[in-house]
Image (cartoon, rainbow, N blue to C red; front, side, top):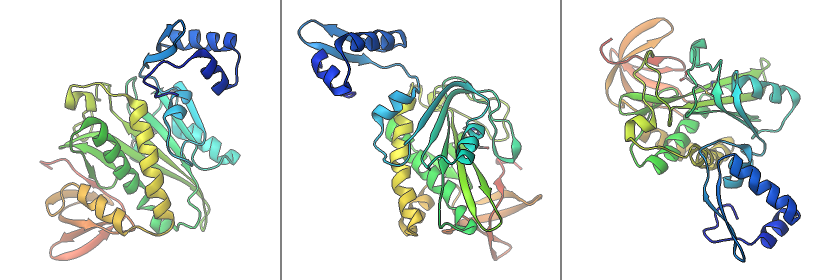
Length: 311
Ligand code: BTN
């Protein structure tokens, strides 16, 4: 119904939604107030001409193809951080797949407790996951398959090449357009839940004072994007990757992540555990570790950050 290219009669719509014609009329007026352009033609019915670029929960649900991810969608015009909201959901026992999305975050955060600028026009969301049976060691691969799903979802809409800068930066050329923050609630031997927070500069102006030069999809392409489409594409791609990952089928995913890995084979400045070293990037392994060569020796790193060039 949502994607119908022809008029749908009021009778058909009412029956589909299980509501009266009067109630349908009320809903249509409400949608119009929210910015939906709906044409109503006597004897033909209604036609959705244009949907606003707003991330309403019902909009996302109506476009969604994924089965587990997006089982619950929570929409906020403004929130402190979608991470904090999803942490509460996790503690309350909500099933995995719940998504919280916000137009604006007033206290968005990035890795290492950095502030994450989250103005209108970007895509800021958190996914609640309960990866039962996954060890702490294997958890390192999770943000990389999320990054793979982001770059694929973005490439489908933006028709341009994007890349993954280990461990979880999303890049257009040498500029960062997004990042992933993975927070874990656990005991020493058991993971309770994972909060996968994703922030993408889409139609917004990117922040200017960042460690790594930043951009947005709009700035990089000159086009405006439908953020809900990017979100639902991400959810359906990530769902299939996540299911394979949980079954231990990671070979193909690893290959795909490596194809998107930036600076492969190149020498970079890498900061890891307070040390800054020049290393050559060899690849990654199925635990999400970065394999590097330093002074002829192969090392596998679980944490670190590639510095911008010139360091
Ligand atoms: C980084 O590159 O440092 C990761 C940034 C992650 C930002 C997202 S936006 C949605 C979610 N809520 C937050 O407060 N942070 C993550």
